[in-house]
Each structure stands twice: as C-alpha cells, then as structure tokens.
Image 1: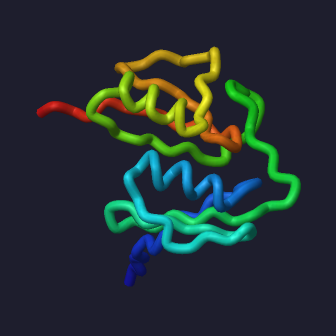
Image 2: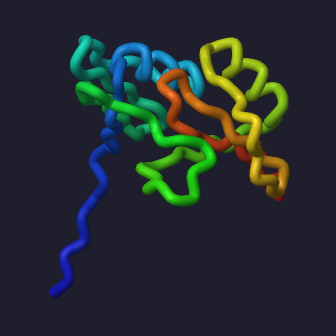
Image 3: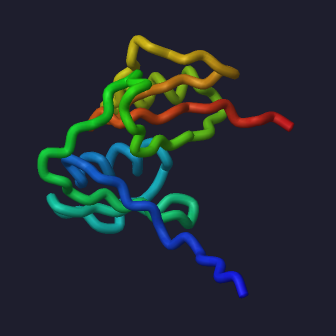
Length: 123
C-alpha cells in the first residue's frame, strides 16, 4: 500500500517573518492570518505559507551556481512588466543577472530570496 500525503502548507525560513509575510500577501493578494516577530502566516487561494524566524538567516547569492538553492516561488501574472513595477514598489529588487526565458523575470523579495514572475498562459 502506498501512502499519499496532502500538502498542508509551505513554511519558509526568514530574517523578518512579519515583513516577509506582508510582502507575499501583497504579491499574491492573500490575507495575513498570523503575524508575530518570530512567525507569520498568509493564506492565498486556499494555500497557506508560513514564515519562520531563523536567527542569522542569510539569503542565497544570485546567481550562484556553486551554492545550494533553498527554494524559489514562481508567481504567474497577467502582465509581467506591471507586476514587476508593483512588486518593486512593495520592496522587491531586480538583480542584474536575468537568465532569460519565455518572458519571465527574476526578482528578489525583501529578504533577498529569488522568485520568478511568469506570464500566465493565454490558452
């Protein structure tokens, strides 16, 4: 018999859980459901994302082919340029290195973790 689990939520390490949660609540149109200095949580589209304080947290370098990537989120949007402008105003930064691709852009969230803005497929 094979056991299949259901994903309950995703938890991300953070240097500033409350600010990290606020950024992704803005980016995803989600709701902050818990916010304390050591842990914060949002819900967006039925998915929960938690942000836990890790003392001494350091984001990965971008790009860094020799380092271990911890994670990255792909956010699908209708207009990549418009989303980029909005998220830069909300605290993201745009690294110089962009690996190229099919219209997607790499940004860094306010604590330096990379994420991608990807165009929504228009099928």
